[in-house]
Every structure is written in structure tokens, then in C-alpha cells.
Image 1 (cartoon, rainbow, N blue to C red):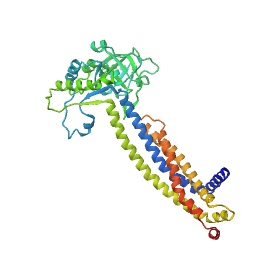
Image 2: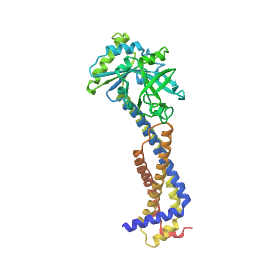
Image 3: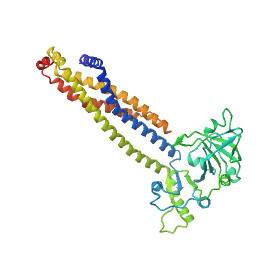
Image 4: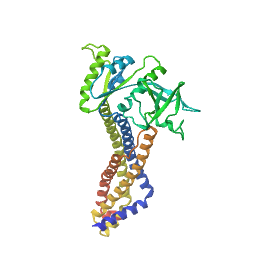
Length: 411
């Protein structure tokens, strides 16, 4: 049995080598469908990992008070316009919100186009400057790689100290330890007390080209009107999260002067709610990817079946000779079926390689975190095999049913 199986593989490989051009075209047809499947799944996997990773770093026991709910941000023209969260709001919230086992972070982005100078070196005007308090790093899941975090006294005394992103070590601090060095932002000098761990970039927003400075110092430098502040609350234990959220809503409603029948004119979002929402969105994208890929692969399977039917017709005399020499129907069908499966698997391998290459290229260009798409690879292997089985079954049966006498007469 094994020797017959091995012989069928040998015959199939000889036939493939003998019709190399047709085999290449057939492999490419299958590879196109597999490439579409693997490429889209690879890119979506990188997209999902990047986005969920960014939000997961905030921690599951963290929530934010913001100007709009996440679900209504795209409908601002149709929804009511909420007032910004100004400094008076955040100051009152920090003073009044005294929920046990919680920490409140206040921050705002002064600019995204700052030029940071160190001696004769300076960055392009693309650095972000963020004013923060002492709880910002912990609430946002940001770690200090070298140096230290802000202390309560740094914030309260408005010390001119700063934390810098990891990319500054690659430009203005080449071959220089940035700790305790002095940088200049808008003519104001800051002492570097720490370097943040790398967090990469999301949607072209470079998290590693950021400078964190004390909140009041930032307010004295960036005095634009209508600055929108961010509030983040973290509880030590997740079991206190619901209570902290209810208390935060009540506190902020009182700050905004809302009566009991008025809706909230602000939004509250938990980090894990955002992750779940993003996962539900990407699940639809996965379904769309499968639908597109299945349509492409269906076309590939029809093309493969037609090519194998042409091959059966062209080799009709060969089939007659084999039957005349004693070959059984099962042997003939196995030969053609094996040939289809081998071509399908070669096409699948080529498609996997091309799909991973294209998907990873798109992920790199979009600054997403690429990972090996094992799900896409397994799906491609199974899909290419099923495509070969479906496409090769009818040609194999047709070849096995050929009449030996008529086959020998075929020219």
C-alpha cells in the first residue's frame, strides 16, 4: 500500500515537471487566493495587537473622564457639543474626589510641535510636550527605563524637571547619558531626571518623542485658551472600580452643575471597555477578510479544476496505456488526485510566503507591531488542502472512468 502511494507521488511529480509552465500558472492561481487570505489576516493581527496593547498598558482597573464618550466622537455634528474639561474642572475634581485606594492623574498636551534643544543639538519641531502630575506614569502604564519618576514635591514646587522619551537618546543625546542634563523648551530650561521606556508609535503618533513636565510649569508655558485636560483614575483593586466610577460621575456632575434630570455632558471610559470595543470592531474586519479571501479562493479552485480537466483530456492515451497494463481505477484516480494536492500545497506555501511578506510590509509601514500570524498560516494550509481536494476530486474520477479501448484510440 505504501509503495503504491509512493509510486503515485513519483508519477505526479514527474507529470508536474513535464508540464512546468502549466504547473507554475496553476500554482500562481492558488497562491493569489492564499496571499489575499494570509496578507489580510497578518495585517489585521498586527493592527489588533498594536491597538489593544496600547490600551491594555493602562490597566484593567483604570478609567478616564473625557469630553466625549468614545461612541459619540464620530457624531459630534449630530450630538450636543460638550464643554471642554478645563483646569478649574480638574482642580475641583482632584480636591473633591477622595475615593479610597485610588489615584487621580491630571494631564494636558501643550503642543505636538515642540523643538527640544540640548547644547548645540536640537530636534525637529515634532516633539510632544505634556503637562502631568505625579500619578500620570502609574495611571497610563508608563515605565521609567533609567532615572526616576516625578515626586509629589516636584509637582507642588513646580520644579523645572522633565522626563523624556527613549527617542531623544537617538538624536540630541547620541553617546551621552541624558540624566541630569539640561534641555531647553521654548527658552525654558529643564533638568532631565528620567528616560521613559519605549512604547513605539500608533497611527503615526510617536510615543517615544515626548517630554513630560510638571503640570503648573506646562500651564505657564502654554497659555492657549480652551485647553482640554485629561483625568485618569486608577484604583488599587479592581473590586473597587465600579464604586470609584459611580463616585467620579457624581463628583463631576456636581462640578458641572448638572441637575438630576440632565444627561452627562462628559464621557467616562474604562480601558478594558475600549479593548472589548476594538476587539468587536476587528472581528467584523476578520469576517470581511474571510469573505474576500473565500471569493478569491473559490475562483482559484474553479481555475485549478479546469486546468486538471484539460490535463486529463490531454493524457487520455496515457490513461488508456496504464489501464491496458493493469492499472486499476483507484490507481488512476489517486495519481491525478495526488497531483492536484501537490500543486495545491505548493501554491499554498507560495501564498503563505507572499501573504506574510505583504502583510508584514503593510504593518511596518503603518507602524504596527508585527507578529508571526500562526492563525493565518494554519488557515492557509487547511484552505489550500481543501481547495485541492475539491478541485481534484472530479478530474480524478473522470480520469478513472475513462474507457481503456476508447482511450487507446484517442489522438
